[in-house]
Structures are given as C-alpha cells and as structure tokens.
Image (cartoon, rainbow, N blue to C red):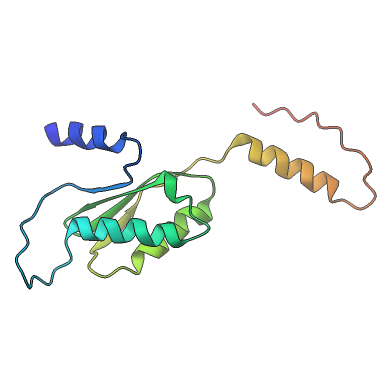
Length: 131
C-alpha cells in the first residue's frame, strides 16, 4: 500500500516524467537492461519525436514492462509513443495507458477552418455551441 502512495506522489512531482519502482544492485559486466535504464531510454526516444508531446508523457518500468501514462490530444500521438518505445531493446512488453483527451476548442477551430475552406465563402458566422 505504501508503494502505491509513493508512486502516486512521485507521479505528481513537476518535472518527473519517468521512474523505476524497484532498485537493483548492478554488478560489473551485468548484461541485462535494468528498469531505470529502460525508463530513461523510453523518455529519450519519445522526446526525439516531433508528434509526441513528451512533456505530457510519463514512463514507468517494472521488471522490463513499460507503462506509458499521461494525456495526449490525438490517437496518433498515443500510437507514436508506443511505436517509439517498442523499438527499445530489453523491454518485455508495453502497457499504453495514455489517455486521449482532445481540447474542445481544437474541434471548434477545425469546423471553422473547414467552413472557410469551401470555395466562394466570404463570411463565417460561428454560432457553434459545444456542450
């Protein structure tokens, strides 16, 4: 139970985007990729992508399993994050828990831009109500 409380507390610390739940002792010459290294690599490769809002994605690694958490605006961003991490060596699997929560206004502007894109339109009267 204390582990869950600690995990929740760490997840809400500003600037923390990845963490490993368990500490392990490393011996020289040890070949296995450890959880903290995987978390660091996952966040690094996500930050390289231009389509993924890396400041809103967190990676938690436990025994080689990567859990992606956070919120993105589009499904393609969720998919891109998983695809980027999937290429990493040393992982056993991925649990993509990224929530897709688009900004309401994004849809509104898309509708307005679509109206303006119609040939011959000289005025758009925006009475769109989003409930």
